Amino acid sequence: MVVFWIVLGVLVLVFLWVIATYNGLIQMKVNVQNGWSQINVQLQRRHDLIGNLVETAKGIMGHERQTLESVIKARQVAVDASTITDKLQAENILTSSLRSLMAVVESYPNLKSDAHMNRVMEELTTTENRISFARQYYNDEVNRFNVAIQVFPDSLIASLCKFEKTTFFELQDIQAKQAPQVKF
Image 1 (spheres, rainbow, N blue to C red):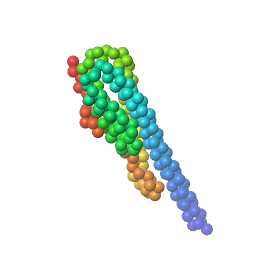
Image 2: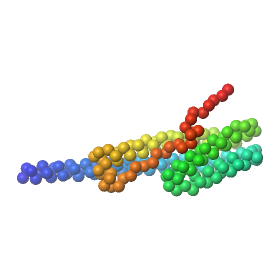
Image 3: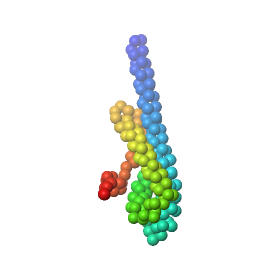
Image 4: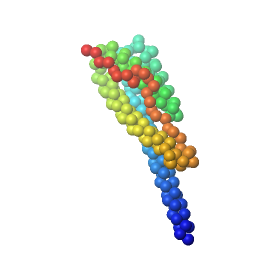
């Protein structure tokens, strides 16, 4: 009779462990999804601001049409991307295009002194910072989740429930990884 109660106690503990582990993995997965949602909110804000930026720059930068068109095209590809992988690639291309536009804007004194352009540029800078913070939060949650589904014994539950590793939001643009050079 004692053996029965011991076996039953062990089974109950194992069952409780499985439930706790599963719920923990679900919570981490939801945190990853929340992190991605926060990035999407900021990316949408960025996409909206880019339209304003391009419209403001069009009048003054008429002969820089190729730069403006590449930003518009990259923005549309980023908006249309549906999977996380496609969105990550599209956003990296958009970031690169924006860097080109910012470099061109620097060479136009009239554009740099335009109040509307300055306001849009400030909003875009703020949004880029927000994207950076959202990306950091997302990557932290992805790291926690990916580690949790790979460590033993949680990996047993993760493999049974088909939890899969999630992709980090990483910069692919080599220029974006380098620190900017300041020259006086």
